[in-house]
Image 1 (cartoon, rainbow, N blue to C red):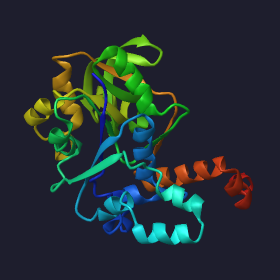
Image 2: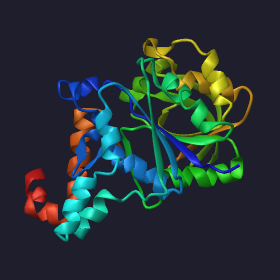
Image 3: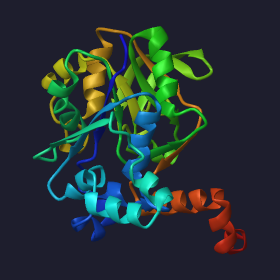
Image 4: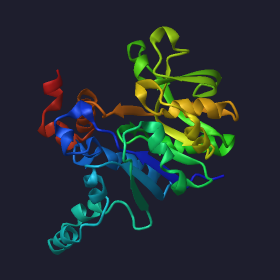
Amino acid sequence: MKIRKAVIPAAGFGTRFLPLTKSMPKEMLPIINKPVIHYVVEEAVRSGIKDILIITATGKRAIEDYFDHNADLEQHLGKNNKNKELNEINIFADDVYIHFIRQKEQKGLGHAVSLAKKFVGNEPFVVLLGDDIIKSKKHATKQMMDVFEEKQATIIGVEEVPKERIEKYGVIDGEKLKENLYLIKSLVEKPKLKDAPSNIGIIGRYILMPQIFECLEKIKPGAGGELQLTDALVLLQKTQEMYAFVFDGKRYDTGNPEGWLKTNIEYAMDDECLREKLKLKELLE
């Protein structure tokens, strides 16, 4: 089986960014001059996926507009020979198909993923959370797809999590097969530190087998009163093998002001022109 489709949930309220997110999707917050979701979609495309579903919600039309053609702007840039800018706004080729569906009620990540059932069909697929950026030489999604080629099973992206943040993550209990690969024995969503089976937390990248949809139909509201994807994965793990993969790269959680600011600073530091103009080294010393 090959991975041909990606699902990007981007329907959350973004309450940690209020009042800004009352009218602006948090996924459209800029990292330098590109919105967060641009980096996520680009990771999927650069990993070879050309069919992408973005799950949005009321008030998130800006995401759809961003990935649409803007004929007036393109004509203006072309007339003024601004070819660099024209290429930047048309980075996603015409053979990349981006679809949208709205989550009408905020029922959690599990519910959001369940809305992709018709889009996915009976195929394995990638899920990339809309506020996680991963910087790596080889895209994290492609790394996981390479593991899937061998295992033909659900692959969950994970990383070591500080003890004080365990309660914010899904956590795995697994048998270590390689330095970066675990066979999952069990999973738990947002456990208390004393109940956590490990410090290996689930982050915003998944390759899921289509049987996940049957499991999503069976789960009840869990942590936070929401339908949790982790709870569906617990059911799926009982019937088929499941792996956790530690990707090579650095993850940036842009879903909160601190993480978003840190991401902007680090990306600016990597840009030689910005680093010099803003004298970032001096400011950070």
